[in-house]
Image (cartoon, rainbow, N blue to C red; front, side, top):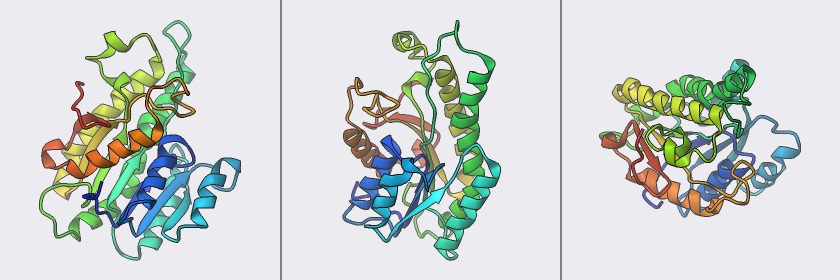
Length: 256
């Protein structure tokens, strides 16, 4: 984690779970970012209370209202972040916001499937597009050669359930809409990597493990603190050879 030296990072879905823990651990680094942008849909409501408490203690933490499925909200969030950065770029975008429903093929319907794709795929795509100019600016202003998360990067929080190769062994949890949307997110990550490499931006998909959060449930086998420590150890090790890759929180490459 000491190797991840970013001036600015933005994490979506930061009001709870993995997103909130990412924010906490970034703030707790010995060399914390100058700016940590923590986004959530309801920044003024009860769900944002813990983030607001952190803002009162950390002057480098900025809470940003962002609904990743609302184009107007994304645009407003982009303007807020750009104004705070005062002409400099955004180094690291972590698309963490997502939805999960453990529906089977017998119970899933069009509305459920479309909702999962809207949040888990179109959201990260739209947020990546909106913040691309700031990511490009960070890459252009960096003295580093090659690609890295300290220079400019998009990290999409994916899932092993999106792996087609591993689906037979994980199908005890059908989660049809979640699986299909995370498989699509993995493809989006590959497309982003191929499209944005010439701009100096690294793109990767990361499986955080089955984590003890509201989404993962308390039955999960991995504490959220351990998952995030792993992710923040993996990120500084990524380079151009990893762009477009699918890894887990421990740095192991996963099959598509």
